[in-house]
Length: 465
Image (cartoon, rainbow, N blue to C red):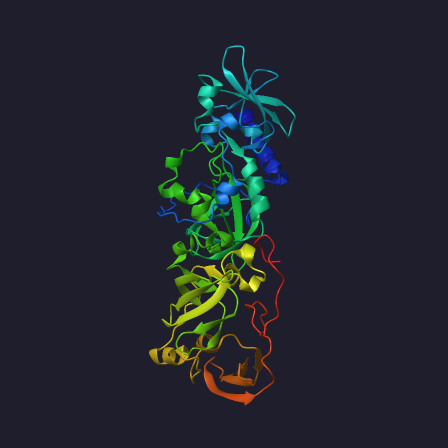
């Protein structure tokens, strides 16, 4: 008995060491080394209807049925509890079955299929880590009969999806499409903790590695506050071991398109599909300028202002479209002309998907009296910072005063300067205008191309330079 326990402990240590040396094994930050906790069985079910989007998956991640596997395809051995009891692979040199535990995290390279002496079909691999040959013996039937099933080869996670995801998604901006994600709890094992985050939140991809056999791509993202979390997702479903009709209820969120959405997928509006975006909630990623329907004047718009898309009218004479947006706080309509297709935008500030992002913006509390003034672009005594920004945009300059007082200065289009004084509580105590120099640049240069903002570099392949 002692020998068995010692062997098991040594195997766990060996697996942990292998995981640390493998570039496909990635962990969220601040994960601690320790003992594997019990896996959570209490993840809530998420039901969400899929929305039409650009076919990022279809363009980049091909599904390979076992019949279509090509020699050289790479997989990682990721046994689950059942696989530790039922041995998957046979050592080709000895003809003996081997335990999955010492093969965990090993990379298997597909080497075609053959027929054994007993007539059973074998799916052959060479282990990249130890150079040994292994095979998986099909339980019954011919290779052709077996290969069209979704069963595939147990324990193997397809690394092709991981490699493509690294190439296409590392450093990209995504948006969360569910609330339910995970963080790692143990560096040496697969321990995790379920976490709940805001849906529609902007995140950045910080690491991509291997997840599980069914959901082989582990995507680690970071929110604006530096918090990391991850999701294991199925993308091409190659050797996933799950049928399409099994990606329902709790499993639905483990499809990439149900966990994350690309900015380009959401904002790649064009003449034949733009109608699917009507009614969507979006917000400004950067300060911009839009025409206020009430005042008939161009108004500065701050970051994180929330709108609903009311209409999109493509121009006949150029690549732009007039987009009508409804401010969800004021109910006021605004208009902006932007390029809908990133590949046609000469400057990144002209591209709709550069300035706007999907999902809610910053919620601003205002009184009805304040909203009436804001609709006219006017600032009032007692306004909060958020209300001032809704009325006048982001300040061009901030001057600190005494006793907690400070002043925001705005360049106005009529060669005037607007001064807004705040008291120590962050409320407007006074505002006034003065003659000033010609309108200057805003502190943020990331605005649509206007007379007062210089042009930026062009887009390349739809990605801002």
